[in-house]
Length: 76
Image (cartoon, rainbow, N blue to C red):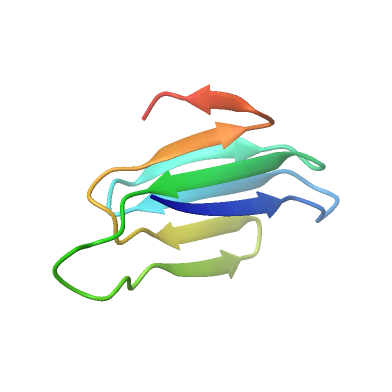
């Protein structure tokens, strides 16, 4: 399982967008969040993270994923 930890210290809320699912969650300023996903087994992990103004877009290479925001699991 791959685990990526982030903290929003931008001074404003961010929208977290997980692609290819087009899933969106609001990440308040000061919040911490964690993305968990199984790495691909048949190719290199090509996960890409992109900041666009007030959006953080994660192009997740896993077949599934889970998100925790401030320690609370978000159902995906």
